[in-house]
Image 1 (cartoon, rainbow, N blue to C red):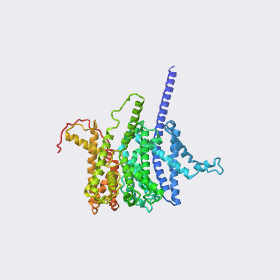
Image 2: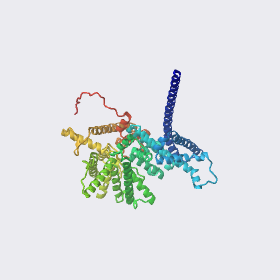
Image 3: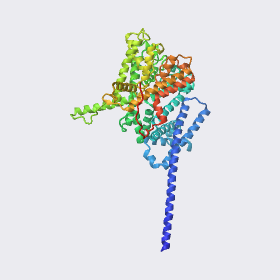
Image 4: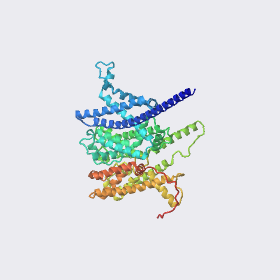
Length: 621
């Protein structure tokens, strides 16, 4: 009996050890699969970026047959990485892959596997379906499939990065840098320029476009081909919509599967009220931008179709490019002389009103546009309930939020004051000889554009000194927050003025429109103003060291134009040394990303010490 019990006990022990062994092996296998999955995901993302670069090189550069063969060699290596990633996930992560993969991802996965057919089986002489065989064995199908898979995989990669609780400010800065360097590479392509361009100039123009500044070291109209202007326009559009808004939209559209954290982060970027409205809000921003630019392009074409002596195709290109550049507050022009071209100046001036309207629309800010949309639907809902004789339930106290009210009020006041001031200062100077109507139009245009767009119709170098100081002040203020405009933003300027009023009147709270402004907002406004002054002073002194022979007046204007992403110049940009160009590149990047956002991204948000220190005062004034 004891021997039987002993035997049973030994069997149980062996079974237990065997179970523990296989459980350990299973855990090791699962961990190994997770490790390989992670490594493959990173390798595929890097390969996707490399694939896009190789395809750009293939499409934009003229190559010898040997170089084309080298490009295809690397593309086939990347193709292998893509295929391994697809097969591995289907075999070892079957359940997760089926659950997470959306329709568009299935399409590109199947397509990338189909590109392996020419490598595994030679093209048949008499295929069953001739057109299908021609498609599958063609180079165009291979290249298009590689591009589509790369774009979708990059979209999934972006969403995964957002879900890893990456610092939003740091990611924003890195995204801008990525598009800037991609843009500089694109603009260097021989098919983009007539006679070539140096890399420092390409980098300068790319930075200016992505940061929607408008400063340029070369003449855009005589340097870039239609393809170059198209790429420049796309860079401007990307920078105007906001790199994160742009990439997040396509990432959400292609992947569809996001973490709660990534959705909340994108929600905060576009200031929508609900996570459920995230993709519709992004789509609304895109559609609003496209519709306004389309209407603006039509208005510009109507203004110049009988003014500029060029074919209809070039007129359309001119209209679309300027509509994008104006709404984006970029200030680029592909017309010799820009907006000061004699043909435009001698016209009926309507183009200047259209450009001013587009600049104003772009400087309003996407959060305000979202608030307008929500308010519109709220008014419709309330009107509908009244028509049905029902009481309005859940009526919000404030349909228009405090940010919308302050930003619009400040914008309209600054807009009106700047027109009057410019008219009074320059009516007998740069505007001398114009009719009263033309003076008013030019005052509207030249007081609107300094706040970010950089278009000029009269040479700023001829302004009175007092006008230049006023223009620098407008550059410093800029447009509304989260808009295409630059500067410290009217929201910030209004906040510090309201805070100043509260201090003078002895109020303990900072209030506006029957609401109390959060202390954090006031502190951030003060920080933005302080950093803008310090950075402007530092950059100005540095460029004066680099350019001792150029006028200080012009250098101060140039730094202000770059740092506050305006784009106007007194004509010295092409004369700058390489060191000064690099300095202005940094200034444009800092101005667009935001110095305070960059500092937060580098240092990270750190919580206060748990220890409560005693409160004390310092002597102010």
